[in-house]
Length: 334
Image 1 (cartoon, rainbow, N blue to C red):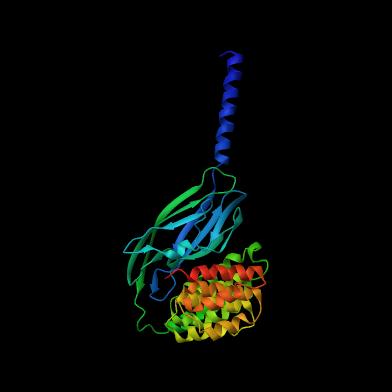
Image 2 (cartoon, rainbow, N blue to C red):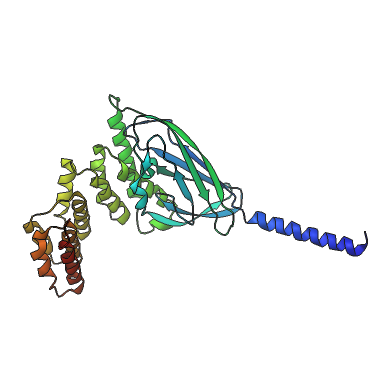
C-alpha cells in the first residue's frame, strides 16, 4: 500500500472512530431500578413503588414531572393494567412539579410513586404488574428504555393487630415531612420531591384515619400542600368529621381556606343556604367574591340566580365578569 492510500485509510479510520464516539456520547447513561417498597401490603396501605436513578457519566440531567412521572419529553413511567385493574383518572390531573434534575456520577436519586395514582381496582390478591419506563437525558439523542414486572400481594387488613396505630404513625410522618420541606424555595431544592411524595401520599389515602392529618396539612402556607389536603378530603363526602372540617373552613378569615372549602363542597354537590352565601359575599374581598360566584355557577342551582344577577352589576370588573359567567352556567340545566 502506497503512502497516499495509507494516509487515506488512516483518515477514514479516524472519521469512523470520531463518528462512533459522537454516537456513543449521544446515549443516555442513566440506570433505573423500579421496585415495590414491600412484598406484601395490607388493604389500606399505599402501594408504594421506589425508583432509583444513577449514572456512570460525570453528570446527566433528567426532566422529572412528579407525582405521575409522565412527562412527554422527560421520564415517562407506565404501569400496564392487569388482574382487572383499570387506568386511574388521577393520571389526567397530575399537577405537581416539573424541572430538570442534575445527577452526578456515583450519586443516587430516589423517589417514590404510588400505584393508586396510576391504577384503580386493587383488591386482596396477588399481582404481577408489568411496567415500562423511558428515561431521556437532556442533550442526548438516545434515551434509556427499560421494562419489568412488580410482584406483590395485597392481603386483608381485617383483624390486623396494631394496623391502625401503624397507619396513624405513617400519616403523622408524612405531615411532618411535608411541613418540613415546603416553602418559597420548594421548587429549587432537591427536597421538593420529598415534600411532594408526602403530600401525594396523604392525598391518596382512602382510610378515614387520615382525615385529622389532612386537616393539619390544610393549614400549611404552601399552596401545593393546602390543595393536596383538600383534594384528599373530597373522597370523604359521607364522613361527619370531614364535613365538619370543610364547613368550618368557611368561617376562616383566610380567603384561600374558604376557596378550598368551597371547591370541596362543589365536588360534593352541596348547595349552601342563601344566607350563608351572602355572609361570604359581604366580606367584601373581591378574590373571595369571585370564588363564591364560581361556586354558585358550578352548582347549576337556579335558586342562586338573584344573587348572581346582583353581583353582575358590581363596580369591580373581575367580580362582575365572574358573576356573568356564573349566570350563564345557571341557565344550563344539570
